[in-house]
Length: 238
Image (cartoon, rainbow, N blue to C red):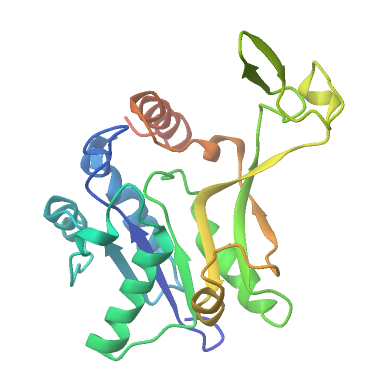
């Protein structure tokens, strides 16, 4: 809790990954992938509750092994390829209100496929958001992308053309103003705003810029191998 405001960290981890089957419990640097998000949330001095929402008993067990209670399994209809994350978060919030009589002022979404959180990132973001609560409703982690939109191409029949034709064509990334992408290190939002707008990107949302090494997200085995190498390099994990 910070300034009398409570926060819940929600970690969504369904079991039906197709890009990398079983990725949330796949061992990475000695722990299941899901564990790294749980442990970063547990390090926070401001988060009051950690919720792993999953439909998979194996993921629930992996979360419990690192000290998080998993009081429910997510319904199957909220864990399909097309199920929006917001629906899983709403389900989790509803559970805590109805089953435990607990409500939270802020929701912190931590995607397990973005495990490269720097120590202190979560509390730095949440502190900034709560301190500026009169001006902002959310905060989003962003990182600079290497593949600038001015350089990116698309296929048109047997040819290529600029993906964003309205941008000036360049050949070097440094010739363009930086472009950013919202990576899953953390999304934080006032609960009332989230439930009203059903979005982690409300209009009043500043950014938190992450480090270059944190911009990897795990969707397939190649991402997984890259993230594991980064963990070993940045965190000194053997």
